[in-house]
View 1 (cartoon, rainbow over the protein chains, first blue to last red):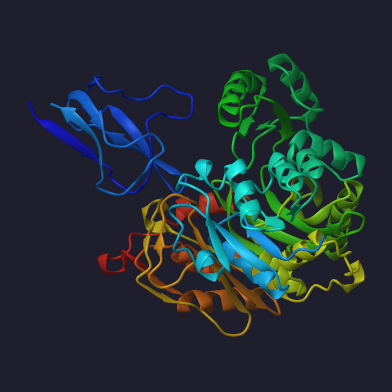
View 2: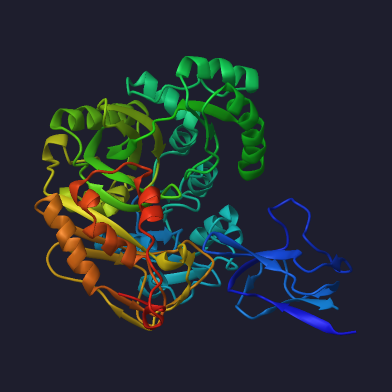
Length: 80
Length: 463
C-alpha cells in the first residue's frame, strides 16, 4: 500500500464540487480512477480541474471546500 | 448627516481610486481587507484597515453582514461599494442605510428597479428611450418564446433576467433552436443566479457597445457624454474610449439626452451608466441595461470632461446638490483606456497571479495609470485579474492612440505576464486606428492574429 498525495497544480481557491449545492466530486473512501476529477481550482475567475493521475482509494483530504491553496499544497491522499 | 469617514467595501485598483477621492474631500478612510489582501495598495493607503474574513470573496467582500458590521465597528458613516462585489446589491444598500450609514450610490429601490433588466427596459420604454425589440417581460415557456420571437424577428438572444456581465446569453436562429435552448437556459439561469427568468431580444450582428455616463442628485441629472466599449473578449471589455468617434453630433445628442431622460425618470442619485447597442448601419441605438454604480472604465470620461466622478458620487451622497449644469460639461479631446490584466495573451489569456519583481510606470502629458501595483506586491490568485487601467488623453483620437502606444512602451511589469502586449498590438492595428470595429471584432481578430509565444526571456515579463 502506497499513499500518493495530490498537490495543487496552481494557487487559488479549491472546490470539491462543480458548483455550490452540487454533490462533491469525491468523498473519503471513494474509488478513484486515472483521469477522475478530484476538485477544481479557481484562479482569477478561471477554473482548472484537479485530475487524478493514479488509481486507488481516496483516504484523506488536507483542505476544505473553498479553502485558499498555494501551488504544491497537498490536497488529498490516494491509497494506490 | 455629514460624511467624515468612508468604509471602502471593495479591493484592488478601485479601492485605491475611492481612497484618493475621499481623501481629497477630507474624509477618513477604512479599507476592508480579506485574509489575502493585507498587503494590497489600498490597505497601505487607507487611514485604517479592518479584517473582513477569509480570502474567498463569498466569505468576505460578498458577505453583507460582515461588511456592514465592519463599517459600523470602525466608526464609518458612509460606505462606498466600488464596482462588482456588493455594488449593485439592493439588500446590502438597505442594510447600510438601516445601520444609519450613507450608501454612496443610488437608493436601494433604484438599484432593485434598474438592476432587473426586464424592469429597467420597461422604465426605458416609459421614458421614451429606444430599446432592442424584445419580449414584453419574461417568457414563461417555449411556446411563449416562439410566439414572442415571431414578433421580434430572428435571430434572437435569450437572456437571463438575473444575469449580468454577459453570462447566461444564448442566440437562437430559428424556432427549432429556440425550442432546444429555452429549457437549457432556464436550468442554467436557475443554477447560476437562483432565478430561471428569461427574456428575448433581437440579436444585432455587428453592434457597437456604447454607454452613457450620467450623474444625478435624485432630482436633476446630467450626462457626461458616452464611451465606446466594443473591444471585448468573452463579453469583458478590454479597451475603452471616450467619446464614441462613430457617432455624428446629432446622434450623440439624441443618445445622451435619452440617458438623462431615463435617469431623471427614476430619480437617479449618484453616478450611473446606461448601456446601449448602436447599429452603425442604421444609426439606431437601443438601451440594453443600466449599471447603478461606478464603472471600471470611468476614467476615460473623467479625462474628456475634467469631472471627477468618484468625488462627485461622494459629494452627492453627502447631500450636496449637483451644481454642474449640462451646459458646463464640455467634451475635450479623446481618451483611450487599456485594461492591464494579470493574464498571458500568448497562452490563451491564462490567469497569471504572481509577485511584481519590478515596475516602471509610464508618465508624461495626458497619461494616467490607475493601478493596484507596486514593486514587491504579490498579486493574489483569488480575485479579478485587473491590475490597472492605463489611460491616454490627447487632442484627437489618433493622437490619443499614439500616446497610448508610447505609454505602453514605457510600462514595465516584471514577475508576471500581463495583457500589455495585446494592447500594443491593438494600438498598432489599422482597424483600431481607423475605429472600425464592433462587439465581436476582437475575438475574430484574436483568432486571426494569435499573439505568439513570448521568448523564454520574456515569459515572465511583459513590456
